[in-house]
Length: 263
Image (cartoon, rainbow, N blue to C red):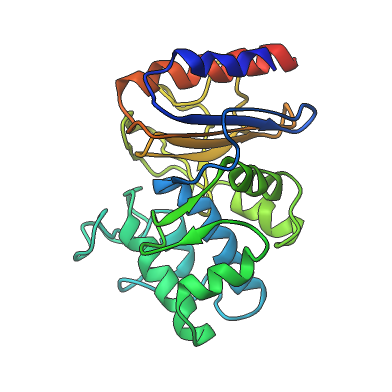
């Protein structure tokens, strides 16, 4: 796919990018491991949803701060701050992006499974090169090949049921406003369960040609994954350059070029 060659002009020393769907193509080293930063969250969310299907946790059971549930934690609606600390809002009032919320959720799964969450994650993602070391919100590292495996799971799930994925990519607690990191306040700031939803957000890190049904995540290590069900396509990217103004321009242009070439 010619569009992927855009990354040659990016200010990164190392970058690997790939698409999966009606077109399968990669550019860069698909085996090189990168830290995923917050692209961790879709991978750990899948593990947590497996735990829900196994009956270890219930999405609507109390979890985290008073009045919050496991669902609130995965949807950034628990009121917990980005890092460890006391709640800064009542549950369900605002969309507050929270690594800490994912750590609290991971700790509950670990308690119920009677093993460290990192071990539970490894069982769910057995057969891949993904490794979780540290935060359930930001601690995964892996290759482009691994990230494309996650993309395929979010297109045609095998580890979770199709109806579970449908729930995960639907709006949780509709109408909540909040800040999308790096892109400012969004009204509303819609999220699913561990998945950020494109909807009508502007500005955004996906392209103008991405459908409102697009979902995924990006990370401050310069990584992203989006899945566009309308196009049947996923685009995955790993770099060694931290997210910044360069990405706000480069990522949407790449998305539009890829969708134009496939379309």
